[in-house]
Image (tube, one colour):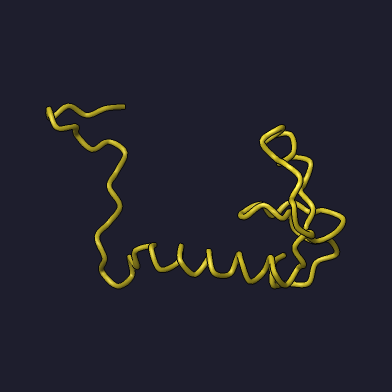
Length: 90
């Protein structure tokens, strides 16, 4: 669940902000997208605090991996970079 107070909890799948009725549930969009790949958990559903802790750790790792462009880090490679033969791919 996100840090801001919401009327509904967020989907329990990492990175999905879709609302659900209760913490630990999977939203309809994720159920449709992942279908039978989603299996019932063997443990109790995660609490909002457990989800926030799990997602916070992942967010911290992602933030550490994103280059800081303001500090003069290398710019991202543009999509039109020539391949090893020197040809630009669309």
